[in-house]
Length: 415
DNA sequence: TCTGGGGTCCTAGGACCC
DNA sequence: TCTGGGGTCCTAGGACCC
Image 1 (tube, rainbow, N blue to C red):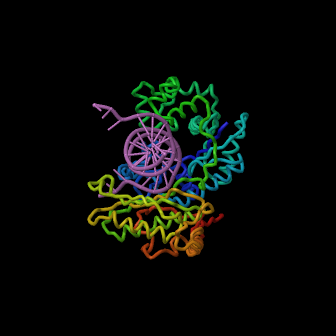
Image 2 (cartoon, protein in one colour):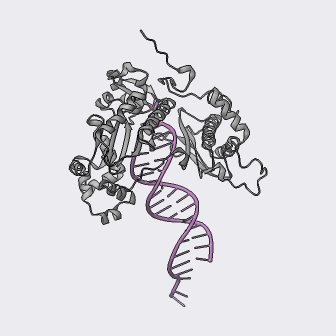
Image 3 (tube, protein in one colour):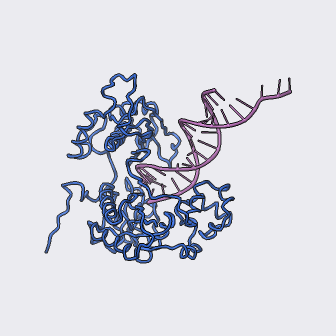
C-alpha cells in the first residue's frame, strides 16, 4: 500500500505555529511582492477566496472579514517542512518528499487505522502541524484517500471496492494528473466523473490522450504505475531562481544586479549539492499583463566546461544579458535556470582547459564565501555587481525567521 | 496601482547520421 | 521521369504538479 501525508493549509499552519492567537481565525499567505494568495486557512476558503487569486482583487473581502495576511516566508516554511518530513521518516521509514508539504511512503497491506492515526498525532505533538494521511493501492488513489481524510477527521484508508462506489461522485478535475486541458477534453467526450473516465476503453484512450492520461487511468484501476521512489534534491534535473520586481525597471544595472543575485543563489545551491552545471538559461521579462509582454528575451548558454563557480557563471550570464537588454523596455522579471547537472565527482577535465588544476573542484574562494554567508547571513560576502541589500522587495507582512535566525528566536514567558 | 516561483515529463519536429 | 529507409539527439513548447 502507498501512503500520502499532506500538511493542511501548510503555510498558514506554519504562521499559526508562532501565532496561536490566530487559531480559528481567517489567515492567508501571499506570494512574493504580496501579489497573489498562495495559502488559505479554512475560514478564508469558506469566504470564497480562490487559490492564486491576485490580492488586489480580493482585498476588499479580506478587509471586511479581518483576514490576517502574511507575506510568504519560505525560509520558515522550508525549515518546518524538514521537521515534518524527519518525523514522518522516523515513523514510517524511508519516504519520498514530493513537495514542501507532501510525502509518499510505502506501508504494509494490513496497516491499521490506529497506526495511521498515530502518524498524525506524533507530527502534531513533535512539530505542531496538522496533517492528513491517505492510504490506498496507488499514489493517485492515495491522493483521493487523503482528500477524503481532510473532510472526515484527518485520515482514511481507501479500499478498491470503496473507490468503485466513490468514483461516481469525484469529478475528473479532482484527479491528480488530469489538469484543465484534459478535463475539458474528457467532458467534451462525455466523461465528467472518475467513474465515467474509468469505463472508457483503454485502446481509444491511448490514441486520444497521451501516456500520462493512460497512466492515471491505470492507477485509478488499482494498478500502481508511479512507484514510491527517492525523489531527493540530489536527483533534481535543474535548479532555478527567478523573481518579479516590485516595480518595472528600464535600468540595465538594476537588471544586472538582480540577475547576479539569482546566479549567486543557484551557484550556492549547486555547490551545496556537490553538482556542476553544463547549461544555463537566463531570461529578462516584461509584465505579462502589459503592452510590452513580447519584448522580453532569453538565452540558452552551453558552458565550455561544467562548473559551479560563481564568477564564471556571472561573467557568462551578464555578457549574454547585455545582448538581450533593450533600453526603454520596462522589465518586470529576471532569472536563471541551470540544467545538464552532474555530480562534481564525475567531471572529466577539459583537455584544452587553461587551468587544468582548478577544473574539477569548486573555486576555493566560493567555498570560503559560502561558509561566511552560512554563518553571518546570505549576502554578507558577495560580488560587487550585486548592489547592497536585498533590493526593493514588497513584503511588508513577513513573519520572522523564528527557527533559522538566532536573532528571531521567539521568547516564551510563563505566567 | 496591484497578477508567484520552482519543478517534472512528454511530444513533435528539425538537424544530422549512415 | 525518376529522388530511400531507418535511426539518434536536441530543442521548444505544452501539460501538469505544488
